[in-house]
Length: 58
Image 1 (cartoon, rainbow, N blue to C red):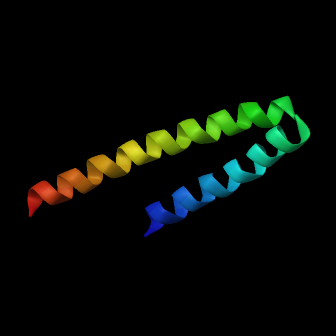
Image 2: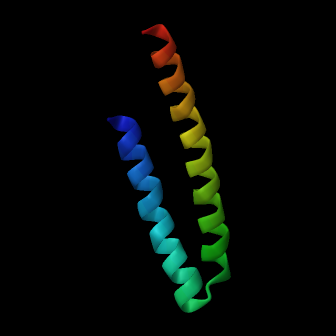
């Protein structure tokens, strides 16, 4: 379940920066939020590939 922990960590960081960006108008937090979203996208892609590979091995 380490992948799930990675996803939760990214989402947690994303939530903090989204609140700072939308709530306080912090532009740097917006940049960090976009980075977290890209990290989440890339991690999701990796997990999808792992799941597909495991499914094909069955």
